[in-house]
Image (cartoon, rainbow, N blue to C red; front, side, top):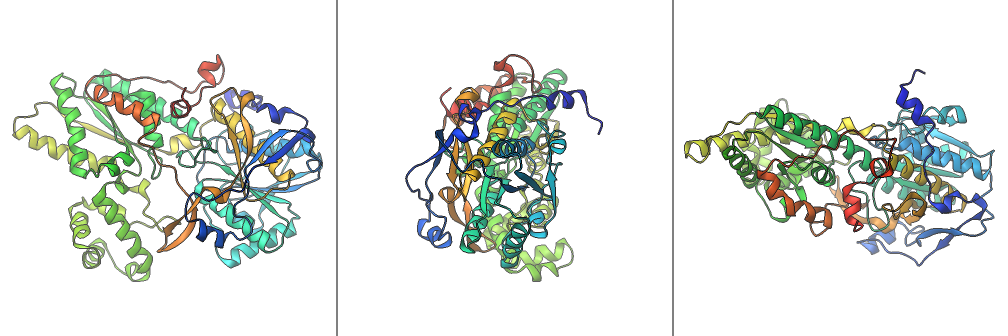
Length: 552
């Protein structure tokens, strides 16, 4: 396989590990704390997870571990969207297994969870893993969004695990994938099958985090990649001085990516969905906020700027949130009836009768292209696919209309030309930053220690991430501890709670203290490309979000 010079150089990078994981593996013991509770809906979750609810937090400490040198056969799954560093999780898991016992085996399930259901595997060997160390993407074994949720799928997964002689399955995924991991762990225990399940926290969206999971892997690399592009656009805008760039950023419901990119690049406007919801801002009020910056900058003869828009914004605007909620419920309950309708006009007429009067009015007011995007196929959880809604174009259209009104009233004399961008896939498979390369390798090695120590139903955890890697703290967090019950496909389901932007947290408050200045004054920062070689302060720094959250 032909490789680039950087890829070849990255093969040789040796990820840094927490000090505890550099000891001989037989000297890594597991210390268990007190029983835990879920973040909400404890009684419901206790009923669903009869065998695995309330497990204690696991922490690694120096000590004797007689179990760790057992010969193991482990299966690994990449689940959901790509995130930089996935290959290094597998590398850390593989190296850990081989240090524990050279005869241990690691099998990769092909194409995500469906590989477990359908028994499609490849054995991971030295030769295979060495082609993917410290590289982006999930192409070593592929990924998928299949959910293991029906009795038949659970039974097929158990049959595959038994056929392969698996001791454990590692699921590398986001909140939904790790909810699946928790359900699979419970099922195996219920079936008296001695097959452990361990999860690893993956998502560029940054919404899988809590006091024990400080960040999900991939967030660091993706935000640095997007920030480089935003910085390039800011410099271009300040050079050409004639365009407003509206940039939508991937991130699902949460605005973590938009906030981190704003902290790195200092754009003129950055919308935060969680604030929009908290203040109950309408679309018109959001448009007025953007126009306020445009008008003030035009008065300074600066008819250019940059606006950052989180992917999930429309879900947080009160009138849009209500509309989307109603659409999701209608799609769940009348899927067959809706599917028989031919053409947008027929769909709109049907919806006008089913929606509440307020939501029907909002739907009718939307540009046809945006309205059509709200009716596209739902995601696997029955929800509207926000990434396919061109919020940036909706806002440009509304801003143009509002500026026209202001011009007629003599309140605006500038020129407005806008360009729309969506940054998403550009960041999901980037070469992982040193931080993500190290963090992911540590997560994989930690998953091995959890398995070798006999634990199941845990998420691999590495904490204290703003310190040097040698001071990171490794262990495991019970998956049920992070769960609550949410409405999915019209019924309540157990899910790991998404972490949204905390409006009282230091990252948001730091941004909020400066945004009025950035709105008027050109204050752009240009982060440049991710650096892999050089001083630690350039190459190994975590995100500004993480530094601020940890008081750095």
